[in-house]
Image 1 (cartoon, helix red, strand yellow):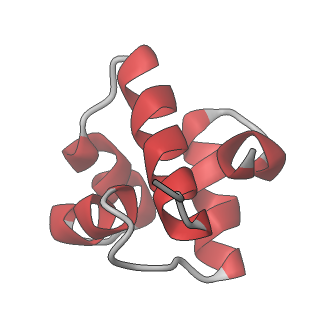
Image 2 (image 1 turned 180 degrees about the horizontal axis):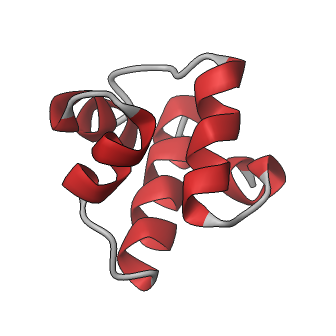
Length: 69
């Protein structure tokens, strides 16, 4: 099965977030968005803007490259 870029980002986001012991709510609070928004990114249903991607990476303490690899 071919994984698209949105799913790849979502998988990385979830993996990094859980490794750091953070919940979707923690990330949502940091970014001032809803938990559902974070959930939709993780499930590949939603593509974040470049700005949101940068804010996600900062909240997780990783580079944007780390999120996208």
